[in-house]
Length: 611
Image 1: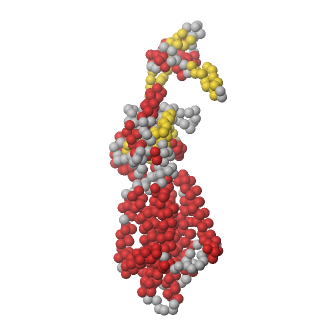
Image 2: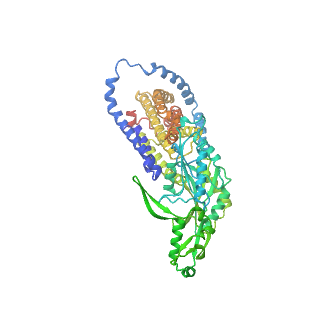
């Protein structure tokens, strides 16, 4: 494999060090890129030389006869000569631009993954505990009617309650509506997905409901991975359900006016509404009734009892019988439920039992051996990391946690923190591996460090385009930067090879080397490398540029990967064509003066094989 491909392989293989969902998402891409680089490198040193005599024939025009090359040389040469004459000023200006990456990086927020547009939306309002099925049905019909009025909506399907499955434990106060959307090309001009959700949310401000918005697939993944149904949530843990609810209410009050919060809802874990029926054993016994007789009447008359099954084609439906809703809607009516005594008498329930309402836990959650309550945040920003940082500062200043209670952030933010810790380990390993390969190639620490200049300036261009397009830091963006660093170092390596080769040719002439010879060799090498560098840049633009204008499903994840590469290639190319020759001349002049050990006469494998 050519030396210029090693660090690209190292860059993409670093993705395999990621664990968890962030690694699984991008490992197929990393495998594809790694195999593609390896395969293309093998073809470059085997098939391409064999095909060159077959296809490259006839009268070949020199590069200087190419009109495009003449134009690019005419633009590049005066700039390069000026920078070589004012080397320290050039480096000072470069350091100033490089320093701009620090404030620019602080202005960009962070998230785990860019939101993937699924062509649908999921509206998940939350009501207070104790809501009746009739009220849920009415609210769902009303919200579905409002949602259908939007021209971007194709269909609406609402559900309440949960299925007979242990994995679907949604209470009645949490219902959802799946919204299928028309293709984006059919939307009104200027309409975007965030704007559509904002307009829907404004029209769905129904009393007693707290709105949350997500997408069906994203919701299922977040629920499976973290237990939180939205990107950012909080888990409160403590020894008491009532204490968790009080702490959740305090946090909700403190953060409701925080910047970026659309709505906030602390789950009412201690406000479940229960109907208690206490059977008087002695009174029931006077009528010849047992506690089981009373409970059977309650179950069949109020809860319902299956008495038969109907068959329609291949479908089977149970027949359930119970009192009409009007006869079981309040306590006085429930007291009139009749119980058949062995004597044939019909005894009202109110004569043998006391009926009352009470409050208790709506749902008991247990995580890590502790009682847990949730706080849900519906945010107006995708900068989840920035919001959590602001919220933590506010809570540390104004919230006093009771003994035994704690809170931690969950949802997508939890995955983001996990990925960030992994990247803090992976990126230094990647840079060290690249530096080690460069040192083994050139046998010079200074030249290996010089080749990192394009990577740093690639970061400047990538950050600038990322900020202009409004993309937050995420695992997808990090993958784009890893790929960008590999490409930037690769082009810098080839430039260094050309510089060393040009200087070695002047040494081979036998004439004493002077300062002017170093500058002339740098100019010759930089001009000779100009067209290959531009070909690399335009190849990247041609392959990744169209992604930035794509709007189909999946483009939301690919754009943050492509943006750093496209933006960074511009600034890294300037660094390769200007800074690398400038710093190379400074180093070789110091070697010529004896200030540092000379490396010029030593030939390396890279000098003998510029490819």
